Image 1 (cartoon, rainbow, N blue to C red):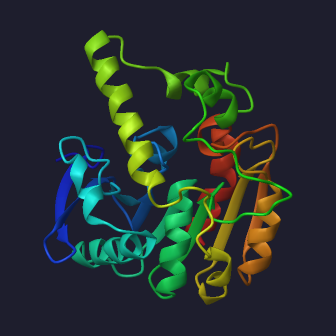
Image 2 (cartoon, rainbow, N blue to C red):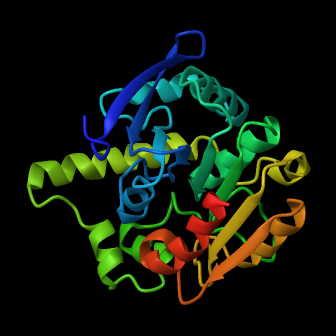
Image 3 (cartoon, rainbow, N blue to C red):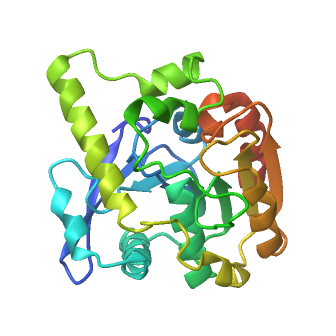
Length: 267
């Protein structure tokens, strides 16, 4: 198998009631990637990291095509955190690096707060998980589909944004992709509904791994004001703001994001 070929590994967890599908790609030190609410998808950011790291990307229960109902076996966020921990143990990973984006960033932070020794270093990209009345998080689940591009990107017309938003040309494949996206948003939304604040701020002091917080300056989903708030709660963390950028910096400003992420992971 080529190092750039995606391997799918099944990991039974939750006393055998849930099967986690983990996409694995690349070679080098182990790195766990926590995907956003829309589900797991490879992009140029991950492909670039896969040149230097062996990426393990667990698919959140319910978001794996063909296995939608595992989400019904998880009651709440506490269950999800333990399931991720069981998955990493099942993979035999020993203090891997970790990267999480948006919903995945929140999951990575929850995991690192519950199990402080689990990661060697942690990068979060525009993570949800905190809430202030001064900066309410946009409800992406209830947002009409035409509004989502402007919620996710500072410049939705840019080539990177258009590439990410593009549906398959085949009409049937496009319908299936849309249905999977809607289901994924529902499965992950179960962990954050009605607002994405389940007490993470009370647990962040437990996090001990060096942490890098990367945020798009003009994030319309969760304000970049949260970058500083998160940084204040994670001792020794570092905050980097990506200018002229929305909620997905690794896509919209790929070179700028790689410039801050790669040296941090390699340190």
